[in-house]
Image (cartoon, one colour):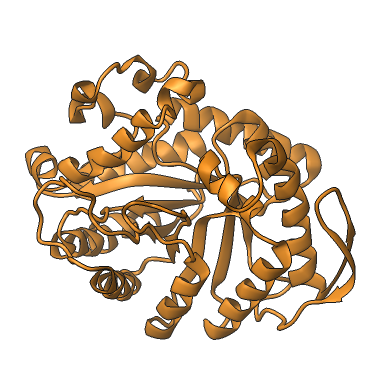
Length: 354
């Protein structure tokens, strides 16, 4: 039996380079970064990508995007077909009615192309800055998700919860897509994946956990989704680069992408237990964070033929419906190199899964 066609997205890091980043020919200021990412969106659309995604962080030292839906409104103006989504909005930080309104506006601006991925958030300073905490996050998330869903589907919301109380509140404008834009949940723990199966149109798996963990979570998602009669769609984020050799990837891409893993390592995300059993849990120092130790079963890197083979493996073992490629950070590689990779993914990889 032939596998179902797979969708593909591009995730971009809307941020400047950190101090001490590896040298690269990159945009120097935030306005230049934003303009460069708008061009990435146009290139991705021309290359045949199905979605374009950004995320949310606050108080970031590299000016990571704090308002993803506002940024996607600008992307809507320079694209015509590609879907525009978040992976993810930290829903506990927000009032869900405001998020529903912003999504509806984006859906109208884009002609029905909005997609909303939501997550709990994990950085305590961000939660505190918005008047909440990890202890409150799950309840705020579940209440907020239900309010966003009802607001977009029904246009009026009544709700009585621990954190939000609404009495027949009208929500305008109405979205173009009916019954509403897709609502996804990003998750990297068993309880959160079960929540995604119960509530969401799709689960978004992060790009740092390895294939074995991702396979277990995808199996759990589908099992739970079948139990509650939900779709059980799997969307995977993966750090990705295609080139003619691994030597080129190590030279052009790895010095920059290595940083994203080190950020989680230094923040105790790895040592805190989230990667129990993973090879990353056995890394003790920055020096051990090497391409050879980290890339296998985790990144989609190599020649186009190698990436096609790895995607076949992910499709076979995880049943993924969409894969979102993360090609560059604020520090690099240079936009020209990243766009060459985007075009090669569109021409030499994605057609094998259509």
